[in-house]
Length: 273
Image (cartoon, rainbow, N blue to C red; front, side):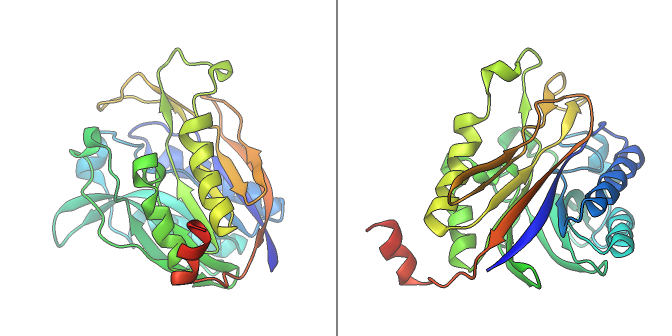
């Protein structure tokens, strides 16, 4: 078992402003390094913003302009980065809602394309077709994105765990109506219960970082992203980000990465005992 420190970077994202968004992301990476984090998790589609129309034509390849920026800051700060970007596939001319894992030398270790894309986002992102667990010096990392953790898609997390994931990272962009307040606790059952299910069955941490800010353009215009990033493990909720639609923020959590020793049919016996 090893312990690692993770920064949950709740990033203020302005739709259609990749340069400004990436500059804020860099600041959070540097802040995470100053707090001795081994890894920072950044939100979904942090470049253009989730479902912002500008991402359709202006998205970049991976590797490409925006991923290079993140690789550079990872290398300079000697920190792992998991982050969501809008990806252009030049072979198919399709866009994907993607997440990458960069190591502390600035090398992209893996890329995941979101599978459980919301129907309202079909215009913006195609469907991913691959799950992968990435072996790193800090553990075996599984990646999914936001609504991949819906109750009707939790099998995505189950498959990652069956593939040997010792931790799941999930860049996200949770949105609510503009009139929702913190007291209404919009994410308790929708997210925390899902993460706890995976954490308790497989005894692994599940971490999700979300964006903050108001959505402009696209089908969700007028809604707000309010943070509330969460981290769970087998013992329950480890930390929760602030309900905040206005400013970037960093929460830090120490998690234990346990060698996943059960596999194959052993997992089924544990789930259905």
